[in-house]
Image (cartoon, rainbow, N blue to C red; front, side, top):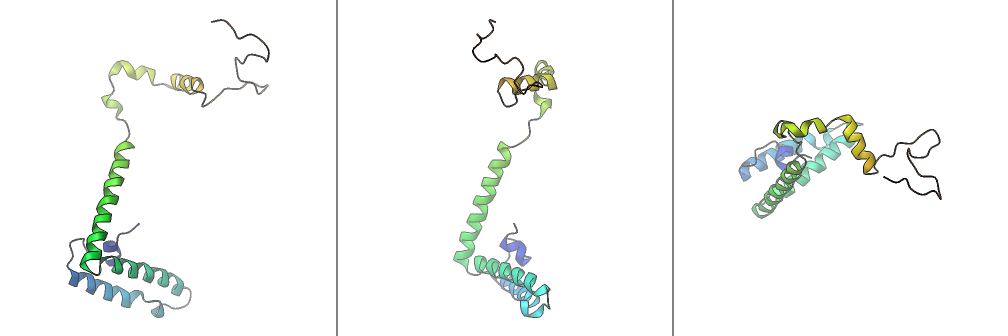
Length: 137
């Protein structure tokens, strides 16, 4: 989703005067009355987004609050990206790498019951028939 600054086409550190000029220029260009036919609906949506962007940054207090919310959103997104960062297998010690193959992964999934291999009968492989004693191991 675009920020108010991106919609207005200005940098975050733009002055109030630059923000105002950008809004007025874009408002003239994107006003729904200037669009014809089927473009009118799209222009209306764009114009509403432009107005919302302007309302977010038009006065110093609103802009301060908007900037604070942007920083909070960026910090939250960075935390999510950090948690979801892929593991670099180049950092895994060599003795652990041979365990990471398809057979071991399938065994781990089966053991955790995420996947239960089933035979032609639909029963899990190695399943104990109802009423039978479990095999001794």
